[in-house]
Length: 512
Image (cartoon, rainbow, N blue to C red; front, top):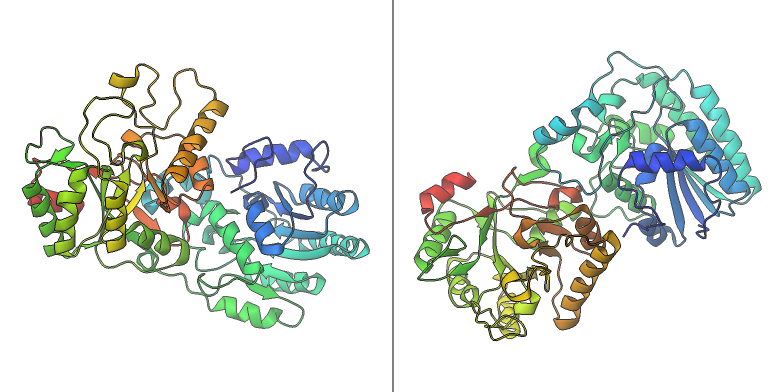
């Protein structure tokens, strides 16, 4: 969870505004006195302070600046007055070149990220090529600044590490290769340098907020690679340059080849079902015959049903997914899912995820009333399905899918604020609901389906901070493209709500 210190910084631009306002005194008028500081270029603001603490065993602050001079002043102040024990200073190579860092606009760390074409439609201006080759004409001044900063750290017994943050190829490819290698070797003569500037990620804009600024996912990976936890990350991400190893590591970076997009992305269509009934009286219901026909068509067409955990493993740990994956989901937790869908899925060797409403588990009447509702399966039946490996149980919230018919105008029908509700009260309500589910049942949730598909940025931020890695909506506005090592590709995934009147052939046409 990213530490919140009074202000929720959702964009690098917001972090920049705060950083400039604080200027050279980042710790004035605050109770937070970190032991470590990550600062320097704007990408420094993307580091997760809790991840830094876990990796290095001390509290950290992370503040990025638009200019090298601002970063140097903040670092000097922190060393002299801030009482820090460790300084990680980030460079984006603009400190040595003649270009200005391109400040990203609207780079929300909660943004849903999927297909590259959609991403470039939204953020393409941040990756436009400047053209020509850029020499590192400011390198000498930058090296003088950094050498002075290293001496200051030594005098104050502060550990000092330099980090060259990731650059998109549209920036990296414009830098003069000879100047760049010379500059990096000079940096390594001052202090150890973690060089992340070019890697297998550099060719894909989805890992960047702009050509100069890495998104949070790459900052998190930098943290763990620097701490020594390289397992699970792609080979060639991060090279430690020292006086002795700089030449060898730079030669290794020369051999990095940008991978094809298909080697680290995967398209996953998602189906949404609810109740299964012979009557199938509304769009949210299908008959057993329709459901079986759909599942048989999916299997015969070569699709493999995948689990929530497989999708998370693919994105978070670089795991594998089968050819033609599909994610089959149910909302609410009806008894028919246990009595009808579960046996069909088991027979056909398919898997599914059921997003359950906690307050309705085992109920056939609306909570605290005698009003009849469509029966829901019991906790014991949920456990049986999970143990089988056929079904995963995930959250549809504990009680945020209420009925206005039974609870009136203040019924909370979705995980969005009530009319007139303050943000603080709304976040508190979300937190109580999540805790209620944890207290009532022993489920290990890693995914959540928003009731009626409706959500807010505050809901996304809270649930992800509580350990929910995958969220689904009910929109169909884009394809679900999972991107390895980009957690935002698991946010607010789209689902096709499948009606009873849809034939098996129409279903296959829909998802192809």
